[in-house]
Image 1: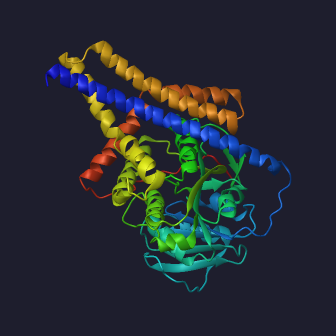
Image 2: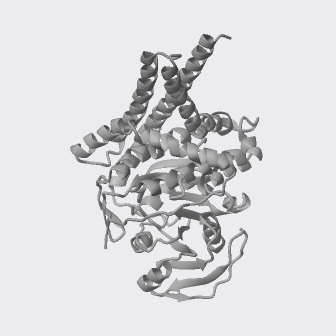
Image 3: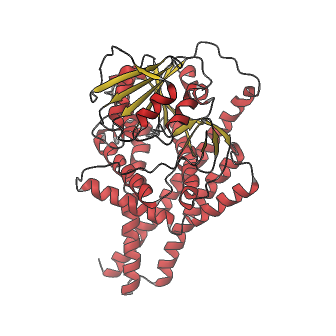
Length: 468
């Protein structure tokens, strides 16, 4: 093969990769649109006053906390006031080095209480368990630091209800989120997990732990993430849900059947992406045993969470996410194209490998090839410019499509200038932000390949969106 033929072959490979990936994401958007079009009419009766049947299964809310003194009070107060028949809140203080535990004790009048529990899942030693006379449904576990997965295992061990909901301690649920996210469990007894939508709290007005007014961030990085979350959480996952092939339920908000999770081994403490690892393991565990199950996604139970507003925090988050993705996929590699893998093994898993896991590597090699080829005169400048333009156009198309679907369905941001700003951000993110995120993801992939020790990094909490 001549040099010219080799260059042509490389160009063709990159073109096919970009086009097929974009078509795949657009297909997911179309599936999501069809799914949400069928789902929205079911919400019509919710305009009337809601009365609980009393048959809703009790839920334990697990909130791992590590150095969350800035946001912990509002988050826990909101959890205690959720509209639901029966739920309790278990806060797991995972060896915080700030005043998280002191803030909890002072705000909620906590006292040490003796309690027996069955440690069916591995966890670090528990120092003390606290209860509150003012808030009987609140318990706080103080334990040695072991990471988020270890903290969640501790919460599962001490939970008493058939379902548990895991959330981040810096997040705020809307009042009816539990009622909405439990619906798949009521409709289908084979449901083992359900996820909701994560939206950015920066720029919103949250008073006393509840959303008072929706707003957009004034910080540029957080503003980019608003569109990014909308594209990834709302319509990306809604596209996989009808095929029972969703591989990720965000650790910020997910509802699980406790006995099934315990049977599957709980959260794996050795991984830094414990949320995706658990969902993939549930797929693998139940599919290979040929047991009927459903892992669902519901678009309108909303969890509002704080997005990073500085480069170091965002960088650490995205490197961590990519490492978690790498660990989750490779640890369950036998699910890929398994004879009993179904849609998750034959469609979702390969798609995730090619366009999410290896995507940063392909983008880097493609950019390097085009730039080097143009400098050496192997690739013509018009062709390099055409490839770059095509990539940007496809990126804009995906973001704008997601925003259009949002406006046609939930229309969370009511002001016209907010919608217009999001469309401008959907265009602007393709000129630097998306490339920067891809570079950080590549760093995460390389670090995983080199076997470097994983780290959560320092997470800065701002809490400016909260009003006491």
